[in-house]
Amino acid sequence: MPVEFLGIAYTNNASETTARSGLSFDKDYTLKLARAHEDHGWDRVLFAYGSDTPVPDPAAGWLAAKVDRLHILLAHRPNVSYPTYAARSFATLDHISDGRLTIHFITGGNDHEQRREGDTLTKDQRYARTREYIQIVKKVWTRTEPFDHEGEHYQFHDYISDVFPVQKPHPGISFGGSSPAAYGAGGAEADVYCLWGEPLTDTAQQIESVWAAARAAGRTDRPRIQAAFRPIIAPTETLAWEKAHRTVEAIRRRRAQGRQAPRGHHPDGPENTGAQRLISIAAKGERYDRALWTPTSAATGGEGNSNALVGTPETVAQALLDYYDLGVDILSARGYDLTGDAIDFGRHVIPIVREEVAKRDREGAERGPHLLEKILATH
Image (spheres, rainbow, N blue to C red):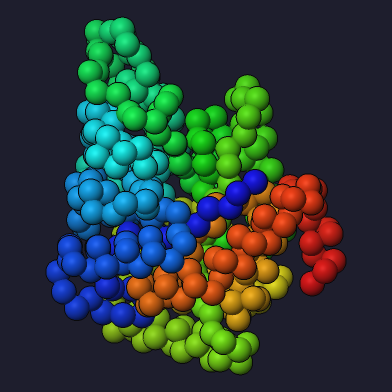
């Protein structure tokens, strides 16, 4: 199956290692970063969501009109708008992008961050709301007759939209999370299920949990799997590891200065299950499998996509192929020098992975969690 690469559509040049030099929404930089991805083999970029960051929807629409091929993954939190409004917004953006839009629904794993925008539901209630929200959005995208809805979180009557997506039956639905509630909601509704990069054994277990939830929901298909990493590459292994240690020191230095702290940081540790998993994995060891390295995650307190893959382009590419063999066919990668790393990864890693995936497809190679023991035996 063809592999896809997801990068980041950041609106300024800041990262865990770099202070922002301009505006929060720097249009010139946003376009420069997107074109670095488009020109170097990436398939799509993510517009993330934060309660204090530029609103991603208009930024995504603006960028979609500026680039020719790049697809957009738009993050959206259900608490910020009513689902009927959101569905029309997404359909409009699908037209602006000529059908290059996927929606990533974020339930929210941090109570403090959610309450910043008035969301007081518990985590499990949020997952139930997200599932209902997605179901409504799909109906608005596809129904040509008025319909009513009487749900736990939303009620409306005689609704019909006059704007439908370019993509049929509708744009892709992306979802993430590492708790049973997340697996249940995403397994039932998502086209793509997103995981943070973990060791192969843990990733295999999560994939099976997602697919089991899809089966339990009565699906005959299953979500595609996406996994996210922070690649740190260099021409030699020695240089790559030197770069990795410099990166961690830069992260620690900025955090010691009171910068780059997680939104809504809790003194007892992160609330969301995914971050808790990353911290637990880092506590058990620094290096896993072929190239996975956890100190970048430990240095940020397990914040978001934070486990690294360290090595030469060939090493990192082979590590990504290990995940592909497990069943991951969307590979998310974001460096710490956003533009430079996007170019380097596109030039030196993506071609290797694409060539090897094509070879596997020609040979009819098996994929899935059942191959885990074979993969580990080669390490």
